Length: 337
Image (tube, rainbow, N blue to C red; front, side, top):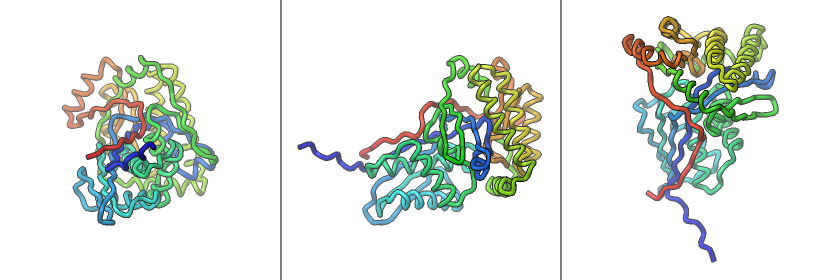
């Protein structure tokens, strides 16, 4: 008789963060149900990490070694609790959560944390989830159970990984992986620069609430801007698949001009000044990542001008950070230590 597999002592998980190039905002309900949304995004080598171990004392113990404030740790505790409750986790558990990006980064970090923990817990219990099931559950946990307003793209990006064109409709979500030529991918990566954006007050929930209210009432200006953002995501996909990176940069810039008008608070004077400086230094296009109010600014420059552009930004006190694209989505593995 074959012995049953031993119960793992601990399961680890890693879910990537994402860069959203265009269409952000069209994935925020109720717009997908009203008109259908579309987002073009790619995952990067920054990630959220989860470790889940069965405990012996019937209690849940959470640690987040990357955080230093009580409010942030409390948010992680709520996150862990709803995931454990939803997936019927063990009465006793030791959970460790951490992330390469700080809260409010605009890189989808909270969604990636939920995806990572849900995947780890499901693996620990021997009931792994398929990608659509995992992403759907992560959306429900974050948006309904935790009550965090926002869109649907981050959970799918973290689950599937890679470059994806993601459609959102009243009937559900469809993830379309993009096959990019290797030379296009290399040129794109060598032309993109990621810069921390000035934060005066990060109130993404308030920004999204204003957008949601305007969409529910079908305000003409808001609906027109969301329609334009969806069209730009489709256009950007075409530029990327054709290897037209000059056109890609132009659409990236146009997307930011449209997105910044979507709701009050998406940008601020400091962000606008940094973007204007980057354009003066040679950036062809760019956008603020996430809902707005701070985070990271993604900029696109001609490949051969990258070095000088980065030096100029450093001299102005805005040093870029390094990243690479990654193909893989969430991953779990079992450990014995």
